[in-house]
Length: 105
Image (cartoon, rainbow, N blue to C red; front, side):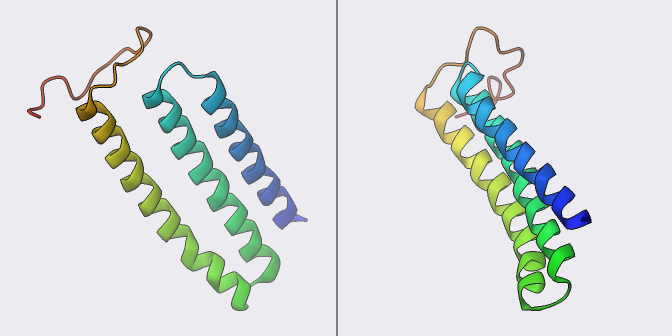
């Protein structure tokens, strides 16, 4: 039962990430929503798989996949954001802060 709850929470986070992709104004906000929500959602689903199967072959694979997913998605998101910014895609007028404006290109 606990595994089902954790997996359901992961599915909800994935749903919120998909809604963020549709609703947010620019590529920077969309990528942030997708990265954070989907990473947390997938990690929750993998944790639910670990809880359900225990330390069997499937559970160990889920346990190994969590840090791989966490680190690869954050690094990939940073690279995509930086490349998008250097390419010249403008931020939305609703954006509050531009961390890259003072950084040399």
